[in-house]
Length: 125
Image (cartoon, rainbow, N blue to C red; front, side, top):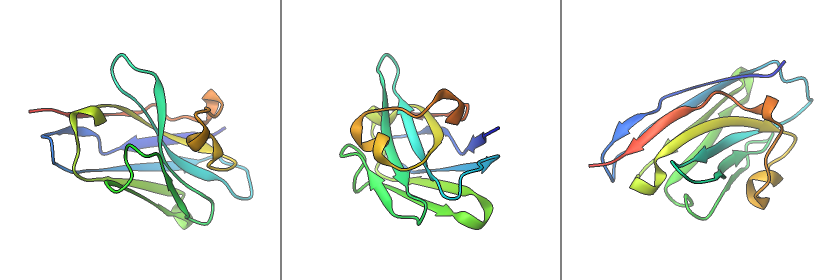
């Protein structure tokens, strides 16, 4: 069974930075993508960033240039370094795995069992 444990969420002022971490276990695929979805209060879930099995990064337009995703494959760990945070970035950030990064970019969602519990990010003055 897939298990994803996120950490690193917190509260920051606009313009600040946070670094999220996620450790995956129980993934049986030969190779997999891992990344982040998020859900702002009162809004629908959306993709944020994804790292393919080889580490190639993909970002949605709203975070491009501000967020950096990286993975440490030997430990099944992925990071999301977030800079220049905006109030619109507030929400719960979920670590998610899938066969590839296509769903992040197409507005689709991996199965619920592929998601972690989430970590909260609050950006406010």
